[in-house]
Length: 192
Image (cartoon, rainbow, N blue to C red; front, side):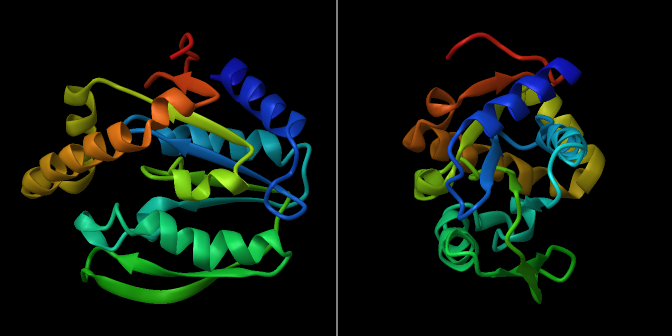
């Protein structure tokens, strides 16, 4: 995965800063593909060359299992727009255990904001984004990973979510727009 992380970080830093004085890296792709692992690896590598690096997980801004559609625009309005002017952005975290909104979080301006999760590559966020990575994995593996994390009781939610994200990616053309495609092992794939 080291070569993948290096390639992504080099690409980000070669682009114009489009989120105020900093860069926005979006790591998108279907749930259970390995986006969080890749985001953590990029975060660690970026901290060696940049002072202020932050990861924001889309899971924190969805309004539950049906929240994919509204999350990108809310994120743009409440987080990215203020950051683009050098001001803090804010989001209210979704508490999956109680199925309701929880505490408010501030997002301070940073050198690099890594936005990780389904919908992070949405067209609404394009103007602020420097680099888009699309992580993919076989459906069976993704579902197995999701159920291992969330339990068998979440199967119906997972299958509905997988259908929602498939429609979302098709409508947005996210994978075709990506600067990089990465598999579930963190390896770069060929062009789309």
